[in-house]
Image (tube, chains in turn green, purple):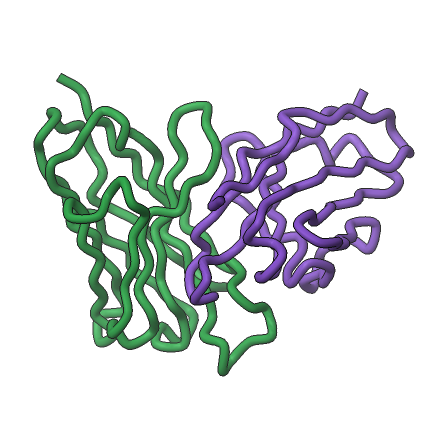
Length: 124
Length: 109
């Protein structure tokens, strides 16, 4: 069974930094693009950032551009997100999400596998 | 527009059909996807590419598409279907799940 395990969440003051990590197992990691999707308390899902299978393409939602950086290490089956200049509105449960590459799936851009999330709280 | 719009809530009695709509310009060019999320759990993919069902998802869940709207239908609704449902689509590159709808709370009366 595919597993995604997130870590790195915590409580941080506005303007502070955190580094989220996600380790995948029980699947071929390089066959998947990796993404972070967050969910604020009592709110809906919000895509935050994504990286393609080999790390050559990344993209971010507008509100985090210039503050968050996503990266991956296929040798370690891991994806990371460096989060700087954190704001209260970044408070959320952050899910690590795996999307299979087009060459290995018929699912399209479907968020097929989800971790259980790591909680980030930005508060003074 | 980058937004996907869903009704905040839908209520149906057991055995009836629930229909949840999702509208947005992105859907005229890209596929729609649907997720079910129960309290305290991660979302689960229930429909991909507008109308296809992943393995393990019951046949009473189906999807359709018309223009800038995709619709999730659940026939013969059961108590276990009570959950939040989210639609999703992609950016113009079709590479990332850039857009999620605001979510619809399905209540089984």
